[in-house]
Length: 125
Image 1: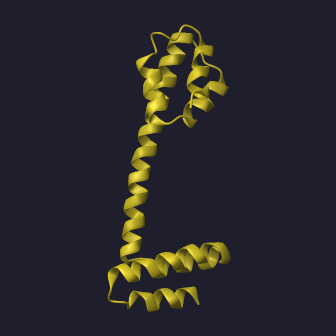
Image 2: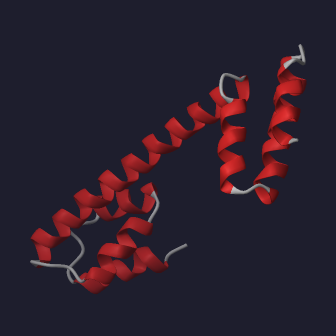
């Protein structure tokens, strides 16, 4: 029924209304459909404005995540060089930080005297 509803929604001429209805169908269907039907629904949604929006949003999020991950990797490399090897707990926590905190660590890396000094960045809200 969800797939039929998407096919009907595709016929709506008002793009805003069409996007709203397909978005609502996606939201509702996610809670009730099996993976098989979710994949079928995904196929039915392809080539709609909402699909384009989701793709663009995914690309933007991927760029941000890639940037954060890259920055975390650089900071980890620098800290490993400074302290020979940093504990795995700090490595894991580094990947959980947002870009602002990673940049702060990078800016203050020369002021970090011992590995435990990083705790303030993990605990600082």
